[in-house]
Image (tube, rainbow, N blue to C red; front, side, top):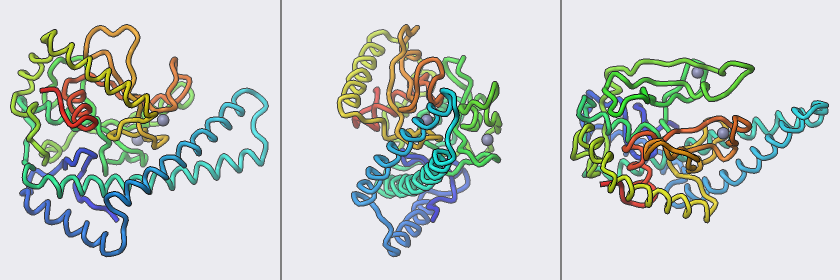
Length: 310
Ligand SMILES: [Zn+2]
Ligand SMILES: [Zn+2]
């Protein structure tokens, strides 16, 4: 059951709603949600508990797959029995990812229904690209590449403030190495409708323009506060052996881990999210998300601690 005829994400933002009004969209989501509940679908705490169990199982499955992979690569190859086990595990992984994806949709629908009163439409232009960036690093539900993998919103990273035309969809297969190349390097331009978001605009970050927000972040005092808060969050997550809720690895399905670079050149070069199976020097899973915009740091802080940057 799919909850959305638009793209959505874990922050409860809908993408591609340029021609729809908030009430119509919310009514549609509510009716699908009610049907799901009527059919006995798991929601709220029950869904969260189920997801937690599936996540635990997924971790075990991934660990065993990794173990077999390392054995196979360290010479000698795998026996027929190990090969069969490998295939069974990979099937189980896809099944678990499918169930977890459904749970993410349920959660996104609940966020939208809960925040109806503060939902507003934003048409992304030069002044509001930070709203798009804010929503870009969370898993995008519903955007798939021709190869079947998830696509995610990307933008040119060499700019301090990205303009609307600097965004594009990139296939997550780009992070999957195959030989010397990538499993998929397809990109797609944003459609006009992709610039129409329906989102909770009550975040203070959205009361300033993208450029003003960029200037605020250049202030060393602000940067220091953000560093302290993100460091605190990182220690807290590490102590609880937890990843971040908002982003999962498209290959392994597990929550991403907040990490810090060794010698960063500044605030926007300091943090990144990595798959739990990430290892330095491309040894493990190569899926990472650089936190290279203030918007992403704000979204992360807001989602994990309840308060953004401003
Ligand atoms: Zn692809
Ligand atoms: Zn991964």
